[in-house]
Length: 364
Image (cartoon, rainbow, N blue to C red; front, side, top):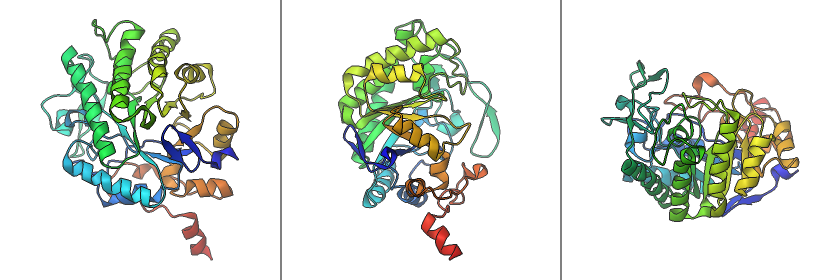
């Protein structure tokens, strides 16, 4: 079956077409430095066709969660080098998701005087602080035009740092309500300059970031994650015509680049909206049907055999099954994920899921 066959996404070589989706896990400590836990966690999953790391902040101001890793300091780069080396030693491919959280943060999390966004519009609700308390999402500083250009360059430097750390490529996080996605929605972007108003203007920041990153580290090592119609953290896309216009503008802007891949999170990956992005952008395509229902083996096979995408990204099955590709190929029973342990500081629910070999040995 094609799901278990090798493929290439640009310069990225995949041993199979199962991709580990980017998954926030908050195990990188106070200073965002990848540690032994991260090294083990990612190395355990090296037999997946490609690993996309958890969202990693390019600059301190873009940090969204306590325990989230960064790729800004020498210590963080060195920590990620250990991760990349461990994955490569086991024959894996790993790319880093560059995630600037924008307004989804709090100064006590970012440890900076402010948080930023396209406009001075707070994300709804509360966030969890490092001490376990909750706080209202603050009103962000609206980036000036010059500061928007600085945010583009922050992604560029982060991409260079990721490649210097030995990762195989990068994915710009343009989904799930974080900074790049915040520019796309009229609910979080009320600007009146070249980055606001029309769908084309609201698409501009995403295109500029990806274009600059691709120029810095190679388009064939650059991807982007998008989540059209996926309302989260106050980034709402509730107008079908506007959604089509924004994502068409993004796809048209990305089409000339020759990207390694476009990674789309949507409940209906075979639908016209998602497949329209695929046709227009013309890049290798990765899909993820979302996290309300866990992706299963049959869906993954159908997506690839039906030419819905070139690869499929999976989240919770990859969390709970470090050897997911082997289990799916053998149609073996899976470990079940433990959602209460998705976010934490220890190896419990992180590095302690048994492999199929270990499970069979325990019952032999």
